[in-house]
Length: 118
Image (tube, rainbow, N blue to C red; front, side, top):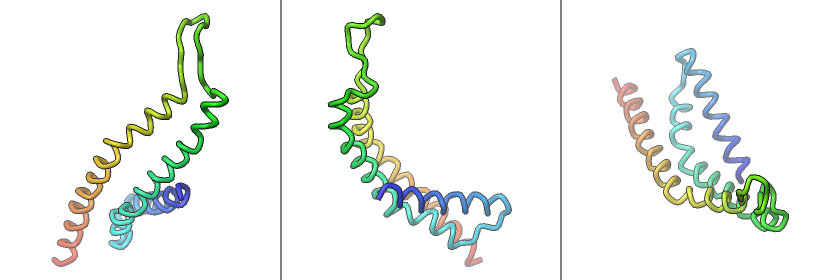
């Protein structure tokens, strides 16, 4: 799920950028760039979170990248806590970015449609 969403997104995005260098972006590619995110962005976020939550038990058990006290630096670090914190950033981050993309879509596609009519 995650890999499909990222792959499709990147093919569209970099095709758009490459053709943009030559000033030859067709409308259908612009439309794809500013429309496919409606499905691909939630799909990608879901895949990221499922992957993150899927690895939590192993990270907790094996304590990857974790520094426990006491140690010479007298500090601790929990990679497990960082992963949980990362997941919590999706709560405010996802809606904000998703709504921003809708605003960009409206700005770009309606300007493109107006240009085509003239």
